[in-house]
Length: 614
Image (cartoon, rainbow, N blue to C red):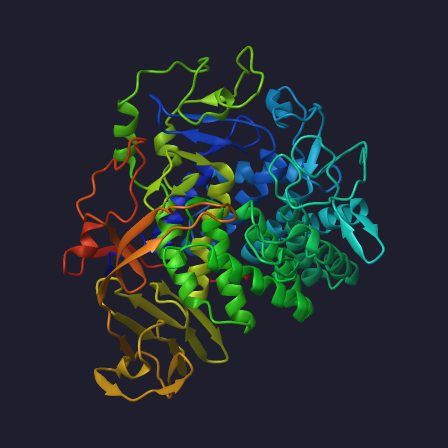
C-alpha cells in the first residue's frame, strides 16, 4: 500500500489524473491496435462506444501525450493495456516515421470520414496528429529516458520536413481531401493547393492543421539542435499568422482585427493554433509571434466567460487549451493570466471530467434497450442525423461492453451553457482536455536554485516542498518545507496584498512583497509555512457568450463563487438531471457549501521526474 496523507477533500489534481488514466485506456480498443473509440453515447441502454476514422493518426498521438503527463503526476505502474498501446503506436510508425490511419480488415471504417468529400480507402497520415506524435514522444522520453522515443521523434520530424510544401518564406500543409483534413497519403500529395481561408476542411479549422505540426517540430529542434526544424517552424507560423485566416465577425474593421489575431469559428482549432505559435515564439524569441498569440488569447478571453473558463457550447478539447495558453503566456512574461488558468481548471476542466457513474446509469435506465448495431442510435449519434450513407452495419464499429465503467475519467464532449455536461464523450476531448490537469499541477510549484515559486494553490507533493491547499473551504495553504531556502507565493487576484498573512512555525511574519507575490526567505528544512487570505462567498450573474456568431439573449449563469471556485449555480438544490436532455449538472458540490472543511486520505507520491511540456 502506498503511503497516504490526510488532506482537504477538494480539487485533487493527482486524483483526477488517476481517473483520467482509466478513461484513456478504457476508451481504447485493444483488438484494433488500441485505437480510441471516436464517441461514447450515454443516452442509451446500454451505453455504447463508436469507432470512426482518423483516430489512429489524428487522435491516438494525443492519447500518448495525456498518458505520459498523467503517469508523471501519479506514478501509476505500467499496465498491460498501456504496454500494448505503446507497442501499437511504435509499430505503426515503423515504416517511414509517420503514424497512419491504416487500410486493413480490422478497420473497415477507414473511409468513414469526409461528409461530402470523395473518400478513398487507403493509408493516410494526419500531419497535425503527427506533430502531436513527436510531442508525445518528447514527453515519453523525459518520463522514461528511453532513446526509442528520441529515434521516433527524429524519423517523424524528418518525414514532415520532406512532405511540407515550402513556398518563398512560408510553408504549409495542403488538404489532400483524403481521410481526415490536411492528411498525407503514401502515394504523395494529390494537390498542393494553398489554403485560402480559416474554415477549410470538413472540420473548418485550417490553422489548427498547420500549427499543430509546429508543436512537434519545435520539440525535435530542442532535442536535436537541428536548425532546419526551427526554420520550418518559422515558415509554418508565418503562414498560420496570415491575415486571411483571421478577423472577427462583428467588428468595425475586420482587417485590423485580423492583424490582432481576432478570430471566429472553431474554438479549439484556433486555440490550438495559438499554442503552436506560442511554442515557436517562446523558443525562437519571436516577439511578433508572441504578441500575436497574446492578442489571440485576449480576444478569446473577451468572447467567453473567463470566470467559468468557457463559452456557451464549450468543447472538451478547449478545457485543456485554455489553461495551457494562460500558463505559458504568464511564463513568457507578456501578461499575468494565473487567475484565468485557475478559473479555467476549477470551473471547466474539472467539471468536464466524467466522474459520476451512478448518474450515468440512471440516464441509461430511462431508455428502451437498444441492440448492438441497431439502425437507430442515441440522441446525437451523427450517423443518423447527417447525410452519411450507412447501409449494412459495419463489423466492429460499435461496442457496448462495460462502457460506463471504462469511460469514467474521460472528458465529456461539451459543456453546455456553463450548466451541464453533454451526454456523450469524444476521444479528442478526452486526450486534449485531461492534459489541463497536468498544466495546473506542474505550474503550482516551480523550483530553481533553492527557490520555490507557488503560482497556483493546488495540493501538490514535491521533493522541495509539499503544498496543501484548503480552497475553496477556506483561504489557506499549508507548506511543509523540505529543501527550499526561499518560497514565493502568488496572492490570488482581487485580494489586497496587505490582507495576505504568512506564518512560519506558528509565528506570523512580514514577508517581502514583489508584484502579486509574497516572498519568505531564510527557510530551513522541516519548517511549516501557513499562507492565508480572505475567501468570501459571492454571487455573480454573468452572460455566457457564443463566440463568433450574431447571437442575442446569451444564456446566464447565476454563479456562487468561493474565491476562484464556482460552488453552485442558481438553486443550490439542483437535481441530478437538470434539463430535458438529461445532461449532468456542473458545480453540484454540496460539501463546498456546508460551512466546514471535509478531509480525505490521499496517496502520497513525489515524482522523480517532471515533464517539461513546452
